[in-house]
Length: 259
Ligand SMILES: Cc1cc2nc3c(=O)[nH]c(=O)nc-3n(C[C@H](O)[C@H](O)[C@H](O)COP(=O)(O)OP(=O)(O)OC[C@H]3O[C@@H](n4cnc5c(N)ncnc54)[C@H](O)[C@@H]3O)c2cc1C
Ligand code: FES
Image (cartoon, rainbow, N blue to C red; front, side):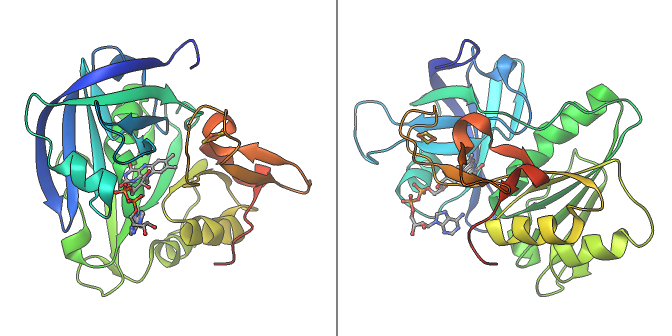
């Protein structure tokens, strides 16, 4: 564990279903919540059980005072269990871990492309942008309008849906390509599934300073198991996503998976 991370038993406040199969759980976590920066993650496990065996990694969706929230799609053992936690029930958190997004600056024009569980980053990035006085716009893609989480307190969110049921008809990279014909941000952030990150690196990596948050599966989250390799660009060597990332400059990494 790094000097700035904690192992903490957090207490569930509540859980809401915010979009199709998508849940937001708020937790009281007085040590970790004040220490988190956007893009950092937590390793989450359940007390007094080894099911699921390994902890799961989650981005911190928002953090304010002693409270933080997780946003997740209930797809498997870990996420379904979290979605069933009752108020007052404990959850073990290890974090904040990893290297998040660079600090935003006053007046800086920032665009963030988000998709899938990458939408978890919208509230915490928005909070950081307001604090810094930067000009942040989100390009948020989902399969249909039913899969879009309504972030009512966040401004500057532009939607794209694969079926055209809300906003731009197409994926978020196609929407960004169109936007970039009219203007360019100072920096571009990407959080979402690997094919989306690969497309962003290919389309925008050479034109705009781009930072990508990778979703490499993790077992320990702390640089111990070597189980989260991300290839270093132009080298035979590897970064560790949990320690050197999960946020990397686009030109620091090479994706080995084809889109
Ligand atoms: C740094 C980092 C941050 C992450 N942040 C988040 C986050 O904020 N929110 C979040 O929901 N997840 C996040 N994940 C993924 C998370 O760690 C889990 O892998 C995921 O939530 C599934 O866990 P599970 O135990 O429910 O499913 P498992 O039981 O591990 O898997 C069940 C099945 O679902 C599949 N599956 C896993 N993820 C998805 C998916 N997104 N859509 C469809 N099928 C899937 C698996 O391949 C498997 O077949 C993050 C991962 C990393 C590495
Ligand atoms: S998850 Fe174990 S080294 Fe990264």
